[in-house]
Amino acid sequence: MVGRMRRLAAFLPLCLAIAAPARAQSEAALKDFASGLEPLGASQSFVQTRQGLRGGMTLRVYQIKLASKTLRAWTYEMPDGKLEQYQIAVQE
Image (cartoon, rainbow, N blue to C red; front, side, top):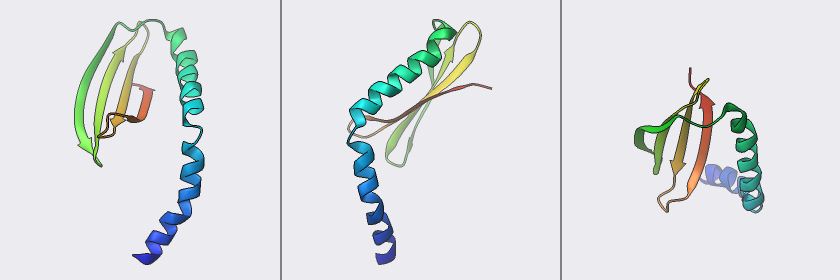
């Protein structure tokens, strides 16, 4: 267990370095999402298709129908209500 804790502790500075500019990263991520999704046009529907718990977080999965494609979005929400992940992909 001690060896495992030492390995985890070695990642702490990296985690702090990533978390520090989180606001700038969030704004950049929103711009990235917008630039990729805007050409697809307005959504025709945005429906939650699934919800469950995973690793203490709430997983929510959505289906987004557009004129030319169907996308899948999923989020992982922390117990405090903050989003840990928000991802979008083309649904096959």
